[in-house]
Length: 581
Image 1 (cartoon, rainbow, N blue to C red):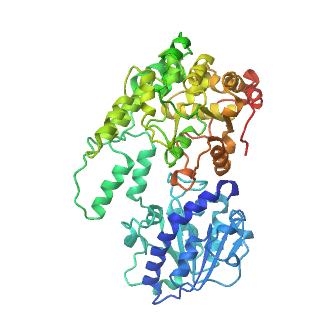
Image 2: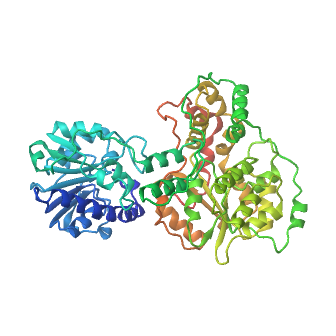
């Protein structure tokens, strides 16, 4: 388990989500087993800061021992420092622990973080420490942070069986609808017990039942993170489900026609014309943007400046790109900050609509489509506020002007910073950048730039995800399409466009890879730049958004040759970064 993946916030979040779950689970375990099995000592493999062990102490375990990577901050431990032993869990044969067995061994949502070739040895090591194991691990496609071996529980059952252990579904039936226990425990929590100890279990304990079962909350999360058609928000869906579990009075929520999973045969798309027809048929603005040429339109900067009035509102900061560089993650994190106000639509695409033609790449014409979807979602809530609906209607306007843009930021409460994130702004010509400066000379500008070859790869994987039948040859061709290539080919030139208009101290330029590896450090730098208090103690902080589902093992493009032709990396190396972790 790599230390760089697990920052302080990961463990802070773990404390909050795990401790209460642990109290409930361990209390129930003691209630079911304590009559026949001694439960006074416990060892936790992958203990993090020790939230489960801290809970174990509260439910009368006398001796606790936790092990995890050396990167776990000792200052954050919820157990004593002498109760923690640092080990590299990805190398189970080298894990050093006392030879004395414990009454219980636990390893919860840890095994999926370890490489597959370590799985057998990891199970062997756990079973060497106790005859009773409390185990859970992420199932395929569950999602999370740093997972490298998501697998079915039957996969793990085989490994425990080889060590003489039997799977027992002892806890899940009693925890299934308990919202105080995290859903991943309610879904994956299994007890493994040594075969010769089976007689110690309560009479009627279910054995040899299906292990891999999907909790409704996992199912809803999976539906909402994919591009499936859905009628309600994730929050609305979970609230509706919870009402049944809580025996509350439920107002029926209609899900309309059934969702069809039938795959229809479709031909391979291997020409630009075929792809354009597909994008038009699907109404996919992202695909159309990738195919569109770059078309500038006449923009009267002087007239724009003359239209600006002192009463006009504008954002205090902008994040202007790059696309596929973590801007959606940043939007979701900033949206939850007490000192910051963000519009309910991530990409307003105002300034690019001034300078690019509507059929051009970078024009942001999909802004209205996104706003209409946001409005449609809100109308599903019968209790939605009228003023909120009016605001969403405002975002849906087809023709926009400076008054339209100003009215959006009028909603920002006093005392908060307002911001906007539109990655296409990075592509603005100098006239567009000057329009931003004219509206707010003091605005702060955030760039998150991704290594050009990785950005192109991510962009093309997104295209592949939206059009699975696209041929490799067409994907290779699209890599050189100007709307795809230009976003990565001239980073230094694009940044210089902004530096000709703004002072250098108004720009914050970060490397995406550094953000990905050290999000807390990035956040601290951003906090200083914006001069506002930012917190990372929020669930979304360690979550990746818009992760491509396209299989990354096969990628048909030789990026090195692309770099030789267009000198992409050379342009990247000329950028003066503020944050490189």
